[in-house]
Amino acid sequence: MNIGVIGYGRRMGSVVDKVLQQDPSVRVSAIVDVNRAGVEARVAEKGWEGITYYDKVDEMLAAEHMDGVMVGTRCTLHTPMALKVLEKGLPLYLEKPVATHMADLLKLKAASERSRSPVVVSFPLRATSLVQLVKEIVDSGKIGTVEHVQAVNNVPYGRVYFQNWYRDEAETGGLFLQKATHDFDYIQAVLRQKPVAVCAMTSKQVFKGNKPAGLKCVDCSDNRTCLESTVTFKDDIEPTWQYCCYAEDTGNEDSGSALIRYESGMHVSYSQNFFIRKGAAQRGARFMGYKGTVDFDFYTGVVKVHMHHTSRVETYELAPGGNHFGGDDLLAANFAELLHGRGESISNLSDGLVSAQLCIKAQQSAKTGMFQTLDWQL
Image (cartoon, rainbow, N blue to C red; front, side, top):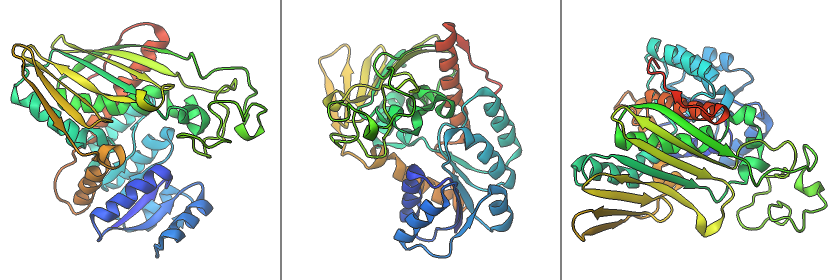
């Protein structure tokens, strides 16, 4: 099975490796990437052979016989590249977010209705054993109907969104689209209810300042004392995160919260933060019914069920997974099956459209201070 890759960056490189591990019959036959020299060097280290490199996506799609395509470009190109693949009817693995604004979301929806392509959207959290266990507990009726959800994502590596290319809000669309898109999706996977409106608020209280635009840590006079310096390479700082997060050109909020109203009348509260560190990391949710509450945390791997009318508490401890808590492996296996024409996507384009719209509307709400209604024509 031959696959083409559009945008072979760090993230997509990891996912491609997992697809090949899941199914040895799959091979990469073609790659398009703006950093062709860098990609060729990385591929050479892997020992892969017979790969054709293209400068343009249209050229690759016209010349190659492929069984599927994986898209891992920067965010604003996810929709344009997906449209090209959908037109060919090929199985598609699409990085999140599927779109960064409503116009692209509408184009993607229309194209999906014309296409026969099965699509796997990169939402690995919904596939993790943790979320699947929570879903099993909710579906069993043990805690009753879910009437409220409280979710949180305190990101211990948040500096990447201010020191790397992610600092460009024009590219990311803001951090709801970068992080909350995963969380909104796994919540949807558990609830399977219809969101109808969202309101949100963001703030930028820490990663702001008056350092010169474009300043890199290596050139800063404070690089030996700054807690965010990449020069000292301490904690979780990576050398590629090179820009000053206190410069005047840093984008992105450093915390944000959203309220999502559902058709049933219940609501979800969600909050994310990007300046906490170390043991303050937390990512998970509480699903509350009248009979009981189930909560979990990805970082601890613990799921607890608290019964409301007895003293009973059930605790489940799940072994930690790999990337994205084990979800990447399952999505890779799912995509490999689709390449062979078997099974169905466990994270399809409709899921991607719902999550992206929630994030885009949340960002609009934060800017306008008003509730935003979801468009269910999407």
